[in-house]
Image (tube, rainbow, N blue to C red; front, side, top):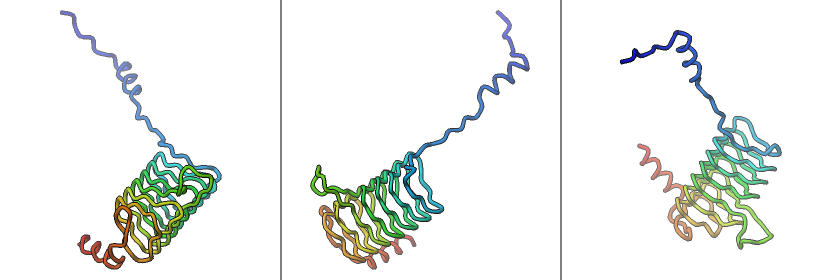
Length: 181
């Protein structure tokens, strides 16, 4: 039986340097024509289009697509896979859940577009779809999986397909408070 060869000291050093720790940069694409506020965090593979303005302290999740000519206020959180259509206007302190979709063409495909308006303090839950031209009122909540085809009044919760008012924001906040205890 042949004797097993042991590598020399130099061979071991060479082997260990071959396995250097590799670092990679995970990309996202931000248009050079976008305006980004202070302390904004944009996660992996997100897209921010031209003429878009993002306010301070906002977070944009992985794989989110914020198209061109969008305005997003301060202290917002847009979760991963959300689609924010061109010409959408989002106020301050807004939460948009994962896979939510704001549209901009009420009768596709057409040449005339209009964005969605989401007012201050609104919450749009996961997988909701908001029709072009709709306004989601201040402090309102759109329940998960809802299809919103009409304006949402202030301080209420809408759910369903199509979405309809189910209770007040005050009731929602009380339910959330109990859940968190």
